[in-house]
Image (cartoon, rainbow, N blue to C red):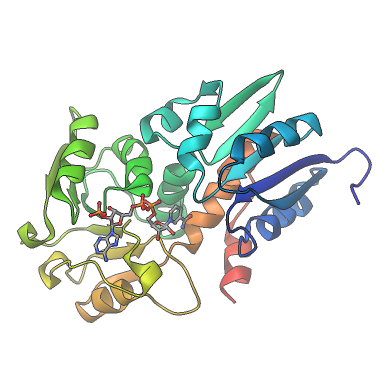
Length: 273
Ligand code: NDP
């Protein structure tokens, strides 16, 4: 049942039952006193656009988009914010005056988690980004906006890393591509943006990438540390999973829709517990 006057939102995905977004947005709504309802919507693989049109017809104000529809959402949007255009993918849709506005809060969510929750500034840092898929592309612009010294993108398929790096050349930050075997030095921050953890695998990153001062973050989250996190910890790195990124990308989406950014620290502790 919809509460009278509540604006409606949902997350669209396939599968979508596992999504924590309804729980997160319900907590944000309670905290900020915003009258919203947020549900889940499973879209058939060939019917994402139909689902979006149905939501608009029903008066929904927006939706989050998760796997495998982030690229399709970018094509469907009638207007793209800069960070969505740079990412080539959309995870947040707003339905405003007949427009479908696409944004991407995954990268800003990761930056917020690193800078606010982990208390790690990115300016002047040496960053190693593992993977060159959608998640890696999404973090490039938000990372560059923080002014790191270096971003090295390592990918299994070298050509994909080369293409990603070519799209994000920068005047302040040295942005380079390499293969995993080329990694010889340690980094301040190592982000695992490969999907290896989904299969309980580890990207073939050498031990040399990690030192005692390294923060190693896996975008994946779950009940147990990933093989990447276990390996990095063994090399003396501090480790972090992707739950903070998830909560922060949701907070960014909530701020886009409602004009108020919820606090996240307490919710993050609750979800971790
Ligand atoms: P994509 O499918 O777009 O990209 C996958 C990437 O992983 C590619 O670079 C691929 O390399 C690489 N890869 C896959 N398997 C391996 C392996 N065994 N060893 C080394 N490299 C591998 O996925 P996404 O970019 O969308 O997602 C990546 C991860 O980020 C997922 O785990 C996802 O759950 C997570 N994520 C978390 C979010 C959060 O809020 N916490 C938000 C968004 C994503 P190649 O090019 O060679 O195939």
